[in-house]
Each structure stands twice: as C-alpha cells, then as structure tokens.
Amino acid sequence: MGKVYKCIGRKANKPFFLEKICCNIFSAEELVYCIYDNTELLEKDIFTTELANWLEDECEATGMADRMYQLLSKKADTAQFVQALLEAFPFISSGQQARFLELLGEENNDSGPERRKKRGDYFLQKDRYVHALKEYEAALADTLPEEAELQADIYHSMGMARAGLFLLEQAKQDFIKAYELDGKEEHYYYYAACMRFSMSDSEYIRTISDDVQMREITLRLESKMQEANSKWESGPGIELEELKQKNQAAGEEQFAEWIEKTITDCKEEYRRCIQ
Image 1 (spheres, rainbow, N blue to C red):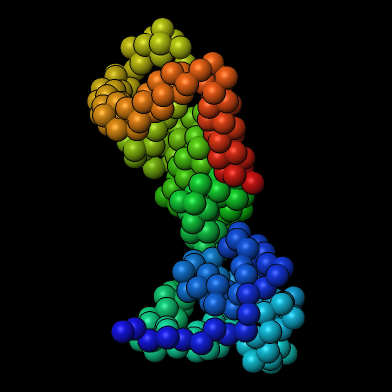
Image 2: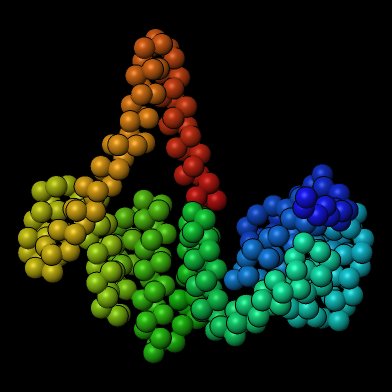
C-alpha cells in the first residue's frame, strides 16, 4: 500500500493566478506541483507578498507562508524559494529535489533570450499561441546581431505560433526569415506548407513551378498530407461521419443543434488558444 501524506492547509475558495506559468492554482500542493513541473518558467518575481498572503489567508498554509515572508525579507534568490517549497512536501524525494535544483541552476545560466525562447516553447506546446508570441518577440528583441542561429530558431517558433492562429501570411514571413538566417531546409518546408494552405490550387502550382527547390520540398509535403488524410479518414473522420449520420437520422432539429454545438466547441477551442 502506498504512503498517505497529509495535506498542507486547505483548498482555496479563490484561486491564485500564476501569471508566469499562466494557470490558476487552488492549493499549496498545486503551487509546488506547478513549480516542479515548470522549471523553464521559474523567475524570482513569481514569489511575491501577494502569493504568501494567499497561502496564509486562502489555504491556511501558515508555515509555508511564514517561510516565504522570511525569504522575501531576505531578498532570497529563486533557488532558495524553490528549495523551501520542495522541502515542505515529503512526496518529492531528496534526490528529486537535488536534480530539480540542478536543472534550475542550468536554466538560470541561460542568456535572457534563451530563457524567453524556452518560455515561449512551453506556451507553444500548450497551444497558448498569444503568450508564446509575446515571449518570442521579447526574446528576439534581446538577441545580438551575431546570434543568427538563435534568431532563426525564434522566427521558426513564431511561425509555428502564428500558424496555430491561422495567421498563415504572417507565419510564411517568419519561416522565410528563419531560412534566410541559417539556410535550414526545415524552415523552407514550413514556408511551403503555409503557401499550400493559404493559396488557391492554381496560384500554388504556378508559384512552385518557378522554384526548383520548392518543387522538391512540395513532393515531401504532399506525401505528408496524404498520410495525414489517410489517418484522419481511418480514425477521427469515421467517428465524425458516424455522428453526423446519427444526428441526421434523428431529425432536422437535432442535426441543427449538433452542427451548432460542433461549431461552438471549435470557437471555444480557438478562443482558448488566443487568451
């Protein structure tokens, strides 16, 4: 039988919004989990008097709040705050704590743009595209002229974020800037993909026919698209078609309700991505 650990304080009635990590937390345990799970997002300004007040007032985690007040008065660094929080939770072993603090030290040794890039990558993976773009733009502004490879990586990631928002014309420009900086074919591939999805068939064919490199890349792109279509048609596509037929058979009113719900769900998913 596994060990049972006593909760620290209680669940808060009012959540605390961790802006740097972009999530609401409802307990001291959740705070520690977010910190442990998001090394690349940790910065000293996460640990504030407001957070300590919330731990004390909302979670009744007075011991943890007192420890944070002490560290705030001493102007402690990020690692000290993190260590104090991790030590309060027995389910994180000393070995895990040591490895986490080691990783945190490696993160802190990164330059400003590199840290910003990693923060942007985190939000990109979570489909939080607007937050990702803010981090990438800040990272790009802090790069030096000789950091062409880092700039190319940032532009590529910006292109991925804009593509997620269906801003394909802007994404296309990001990918071509990345390609101009380091010449990697990957950037040109995504540049071609943006054209494929933003142009009419005739316009697309005319554009690639004038570019030998583009023709070679688009052969790979079309192969990937056919593969993706096959996976869709043999999986989610079948399920969607079955749902469609089921709702159609139930009558015009239910079918209309299903269509409206499906569209609403898509809109909500897009709104979540741009918040």
